[in-house]
Length: 152
Figure 1 (cartoon, one colour):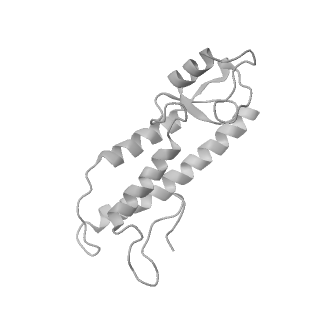
Figure 2 (cartoon, rainbow, N blue to C red):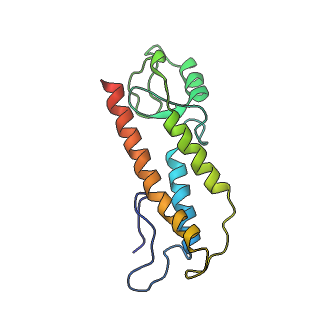
Figure 3 (cartoon, rainbow, N blue to C red):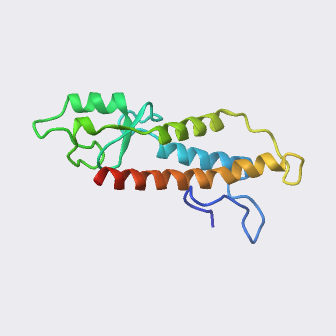
């Protein structure tokens, strides 16, 4: 069975020894692409630009959220994702998510080099495969921490 969830490292199947996505490079890149989905603004559907967190813990582009809230109803500003009431002055810049977005984008823009499983570039492959799990874990922890700090 194919490994699911970006928090798991992609590795060969135990029984066949084959990679779930055809190659270790493709597996690592797919993991980064799944992480990219986690740093995508649900308003513009693009990678977060100048990310901010709001009281419920969701992240958006500052410009997208400001534009969305400029069109709000009489109910006042609400989270575009969960509809929780929000305060306009509680948009908190999220520099950790911004740094994470930059790193993921940079890694996805790099051209993957062909790598043999036993070749001299084994270290590059290992790095690409190993980075997907910690980045995902970090994003989950940041979102949890953001939610907790905004509630207190």
